[in-house]
Amino acid sequence: MFANRSFWTRRLLAAGIHLGLSALVAGLAAGLVFGVWYPYPYREISGGRELFLIVVTVDVILGPLLTLTVFNIKKPVKELRRDLAVIAVLQLAALGYGMWTVAIARPVHLVFEVDRFRVVHAIDVPQEELKQAPAGLDRLPLTGPTLLSMREFTNEKESFEATMAAMQGVSLSARPGLWQAYEKGKSKILKAARPLEQLKSRFPGRAAEIDAALRSAGRGATSVGYVPMVGRQTFWTVLLDNNTAEVIAFVPIDSF
Image (cartoon, rainbow, N blue to C red):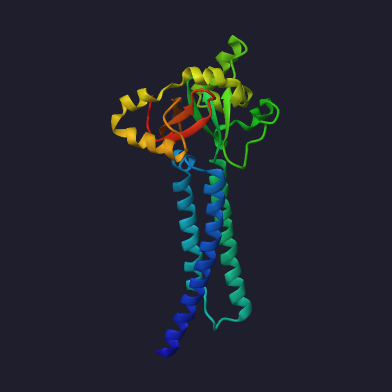
């Protein structure tokens, strides 16, 4: 009886140690995902939280459970080490695949497109078109999404081709050849911005939420406008400075 208790105690101890190590690795991965790839509000807009939690939960639970299953102190040391090494390799491979999946779905740019902002994700951008991007924009950032704007079409042919591509699922904002520095679109961004009071009058029940977002950004409601924003599966609103077009805050309101 006591021998059997000792047997399970050792197994649980091994599984517990494995769980702690797995949680530590998951914490480091979370720092990368939510601190760099999916900073607020993109973890909400782009679904990064749900995707990461699915990946990590399966990985963190899988490894310790396998250790609990195979750990036996009576096994030859060489065999036990081999079993644990196989588990570690499987777990790291699963985590690596999961992180790769999260990485290719990450937001890379917030682009002003005609009269709205659109979140562009790495997987949205045709890789073969990256060479058409302006200098400095031909690589997708790994340090978090950046602000861009969309330039004017140079001719009717380009407009037609971009429209046809959009009909096939490639949005205008995901076309690298149409990107330009955010500042170059400043006049159009300010022209598209609507008065903040209009947003509050349209959504009176959300006025306190809007004011709270501004306070968190250290701003008052003076000289603030808003522009709708398109995410992966949801719509938000960007609050910006009416003088500089600086993005101030985000609120989860569909303002279209």
